[in-house]
Length: 111
Image (cartoon, rainbow, N blue to C red; front, side, top):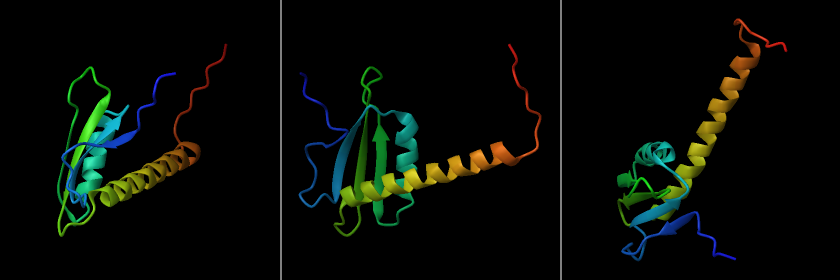
């Protein structure tokens, strides 16, 4: 059986205190990369954040996070992922409420 690849991996070269680190996230693309970068940059303790997809044939993105005051970039990443999950849930709830309650033309396909 093949070894499973971890979803998130800290790349070599990270500061010992993780105040600056690059994280590799497997099975993701620009869709989450841009949203995650946006969420990280909303944090005033984040000095820099950028992401890239190294090669189109690789299903992976790399997120670089640098923090002010030697704070942990890993903590910032975990918080941003949690906040992004909450935001997506809020959008889904709003969409479903609108979908179920708003007055718009509905078409039902009959065989």
